[in-house]
Length: 127
Image 1 (tube, rainbow, N blue to C red):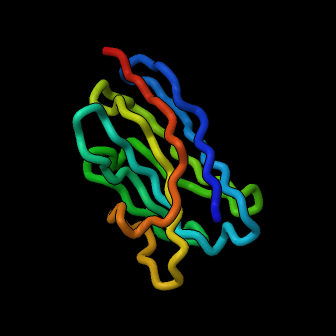
Image 2: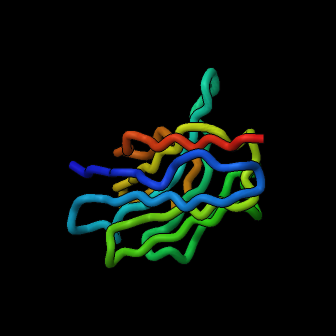
């Protein structure tokens, strides 16, 4: 069992920045593929970013490319999402997720491939 706990959400004005963190339990965090997703009211859960086990491969959803950066610190069992130039349409609950499959695709965007999810953190961007 893997527990994921997100933090860092909040209210920010358009054009501002936030940094989300996701702390994971377990001794083998470096073996997890990690991802960030978001879900706005009335919409499906959307892929935001994914990262490989050692952090060398990253992947982003089209709507956040060039503005968001995913990173990880395996010594701290933590994955981060730096969000810059925020827009009102970025408002959503943000979730981190872990894919424990040894054959998983680094940076994968398929939410059904992820095995464990955090409880989410709310990000609200005002115009």
